[in-house]
Length: 513
Image: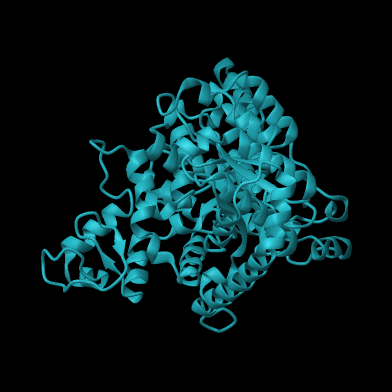
């Protein structure tokens, strides 16, 4: 055998085992690793990436305003069925009587839009961010102006709204939603205004409870129960024709309008605490309305004081707060420096909605370390942050939150107004920040881990790898038939059951790759 032949044979003997090793490694890859590799392979192919993200299990949507989640087309249907009129110039809904459907009448019936494509498209553009372009009206102003324009449409149509939104959510593989909803129709705010302000929070609470707030809470619970039953009827739940939305679990955060006078805000916050203490449909409350408006800025510290006082009386009620939905130039610099920290430390927030201006806060790194230590999740709303604040890409703090170990979850905010959905939020996250499948999966798990569903978590720790509790430690998470000890644990803990369901969805999804 020549020297060249011996050298060739030796090389083959070396290469063959290495090749076999790589082959064995590839064969030993987990389903998660294979799914991760597939995501990496389609990152630069938008259509395939979108299809992948659409089908990926997405857990929960923790930041969803019910009124803002309804698409304008559905709102037009609601308004037409209520015989409402529309101001042709301002696209604002008006109570009847209406003008005729002839062109150029000032306030035609909304139903006229069905035969007038110009009016129909004008309404959709006015009630959403569709076709909006920077100009005389900012994205911020156009976005928030939509609610006053279509507000009347949602009155009396809560059930249809819920059915529409959860059915869409189910089709893109969401399993849980916490709707922000002012479910009492402003009754508590009106009571607060009627009784007047008392700077002594204890006395103010007693006056409200004695003056009818408990009755408002009971009536609100009854109304919501009826709305949910009607929504299930709309979706044909429990029948062979049941729609996908029947499988979505729903809970509510009572929605406080922080732009109202302080007596109304206190009454609504108190109602939120009362509802979350007495009605399992409600799992907490949140403060809403633009953070930069005069009253939310001027009364911010007072609102935190209200929550702090009532939290002492209702310590088990969950709190999620909008904070940091601001950007430099929108308000004075000093108003950017403390809202997130105050919401966590004084407002007892377990979750922060938006948190966009975190780097403008005093000691932002220290704040994020504190949030990580306290396990405070940030609800990330990439689409609305771009549309309202003009903050996106490298200017968005999502990767910084992740760097400092702050738990995050993607959410939709107002998908109807934004003309988006949860798949779009995932697409923005992957395209803008090159997130891995493991990071997306972690966010999805965090959405249920930080939900306000009752019961214990499936996981003993989420700081590093997600590890199941002892009762389920020997099981394959998400298995169709858990062990006796695990089944008993799941039966007693609703949050863990939703998490188990998510793991089953992940297992089925990853088998495809």
